[in-house]
Image 1 (cartoon, rainbow, N blue to C red):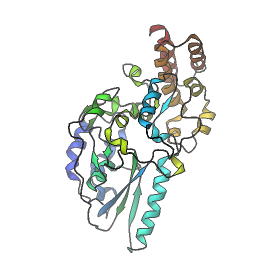
Image 2: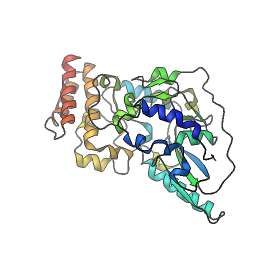
Image 3: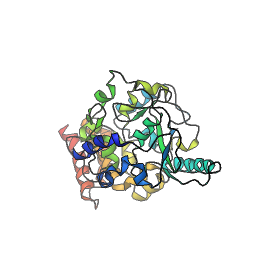
Image 4: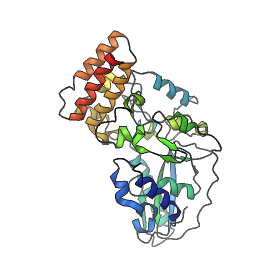
Length: 338
């Protein structure tokens, strides 16, 4: 449970926005300080109940981090962030929070509440840290001693004043593995992320051409990036989810880039139905996979692989979207210039 006075977070939020670290996420600036003022977002809010929900698939082996690192070395395979391999977490967590709020309402009447899951101007990690869910890691994500960082966050804004939970002490010490491992050096300083360089931002939030200088650094990551979490020592304690919702969907994990590049828009919509991936749309999907194929071509694969990749790319040379065409052409050149 967190209180509603998180005004001490406002200077950091303002400085982050002023430096343009939010990139194309204009809604971050549009909502401004409302993110740090729960009672302005939902008038009458007196306390915030925070929740976290593990998302590692139930069958995840103990050496999952090593397996994920190996995926990133398999250049002809497209890698999707672990959290996005199952069902859209927004729907799952929001439904559970709603049921929890309804149960609370059975004991506190009348109760006013609003449920949020990454769906409104809410400083989720800040509220979670203040409510004792964990501490902010140097990568800006929330860390928990028993669960690492492989979990989703959600909140219930309440119109009753409940006792706040004591915050946890940070336990990162001198470790800066997350900073050092970031492929694009998006963590520009401890606790400071430049989203414009973050692969998760570039592949999901960014609408348009990906900066040329960042494309070779993206490797085969086509939706999100887990590197700062994979390297984190605390994620050896990451917990598995008991929900089948987050089990890996067939057709995403371990797929060849050439197969993913050939998805038509209809296939994309069908195969990503109920998935968080669907919201980026087919054009961004093709853009992301094109970059990954370009990086694979630059690694000089076997001739038959080169031919298959060229064939897959050439399917979209006449795509109506200008920056999809540009990314396809960029990828085709990598086999020559690499």
